[in-house]
Image (cartoon, rainbow, N blue to C red):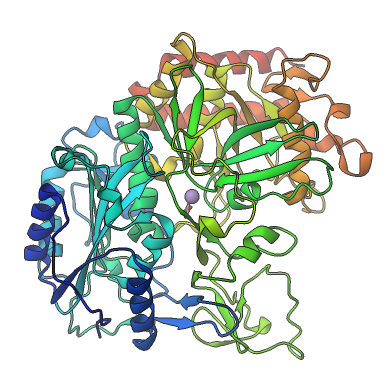
Length: 638
Ligand code: OXD
Ligand code: MN
């Protein structure tokens, strides 16, 4: 059944180029109705009510205006194998792997698709032909929604205007949270600018009536799913999946994949990074960005509570994506293109992230979390013990009665909350500044149980780019990977590059050669070291991460008497143990700052092989130079 909406069937108010584009898609997709979204409260409520009536979402009794959606278990994460960048020229997107491309064995994927660990490519014309077939009549029986939206603050020279067409009301209400949505997105637009608007087309790929059973009221077409990007046409076309990372086109598709490609063309950076401010006890404020792979705690770091280091304050600008430009004075300025949080729910608790926990109790759409019989949400790591006796009964994300002894999680490990940024109680006053905030440090990090110390600082910009390029991390549930394998994830961007990674590195390196830029310092952190014997984490993480942030902060000051001391190692500068503010006044556990030459030699081998195999002739000489220099430093160690 389609969700009823009082559709307005009017395209008035759209710039002419967009009107033509929308009309073309209406003709192709053949919806019953179409509706131009204005982003108003009434429209939103009408959509939520009709989805509730249709059983697509359930209202949570305990909270104001909160809902749960549960998906088809086959549609729970980003699908990296089906995420494709389409251009004329393959080398613009990927390098040919030395050992060749794997054959495409999935009968639902195009034979000419080229898959690599650093992204997938296909010829644009060929892909457009395939998509034309998938989209033909794909919205029959449904309403087509047109969502005008803006990524970035209004009146910012750095923001981008976009439009998403979708047949999913879940996408409409989520886009309203995640982006600045509504016709005012077009206010600053001159008629002639129509071609700079990013165009997004999305369908769940299930026309009505359907003879296939629809799982848990969540229509999706996993066999036919394709998430495609056309940087040369400023277009995104996503078919078959309703899951956020594949269907909310403003987020990963626009802000990172199309965004990184626009950024290279226009001379800026679109990155998978949180943005935070840190104010020290003397009242000095600095802004940092930090890149971690998906589900490695970016939201928690962006909302860190520094209680155990009195006088410090952390405020949030964004938890996932940073768009960064060097301004006229050579300072790197960052805006958050998003307007909300699409955060991983499991592990969010009063102790790990009290700010997030508070903020999701109003106006939030949860996806694939569990629900208690008294209308509350539940997930693993929420901090409430379930003893089976005094707890309300729990309905799992699979809509079944749940108990611990079932041996499977109540909430999906990639379950999410979707909440407006304004609900975050520690927003930095500059979060919406059209000019962005000035960035002084870039922090890279990953989930590394062994070998990688708690924190180190790179020697300079070029070495810092090498550190970003060499990032590796344990796989998480945010994509379709299984198990805890250590994966290469350069710049935490592996699933999000919009163009060839070798050229991306050259783009980053190019800023090192430009005169008069105030380049931020580059650091690497690892909260996830484990004791080899007990397998327990060596570092408590969360709020205590302020101790590491404090060290980074003190590395940035020019006043040598205040500066935190460090010593040079082959991997970079490591804190002198006594300058890292240890827990309860103690020195930090030396195991957290240990450098094993043997570990790093192996790491170098893995990185060299990865670059050799996958980046091939597109690897910039500067990166080879850094790798050689690193190996040399290691060989000089005894
Ligand atoms: C996300 C992700 O949803 O990185 O932010 O997968
Ligand atoms: Mn992310």
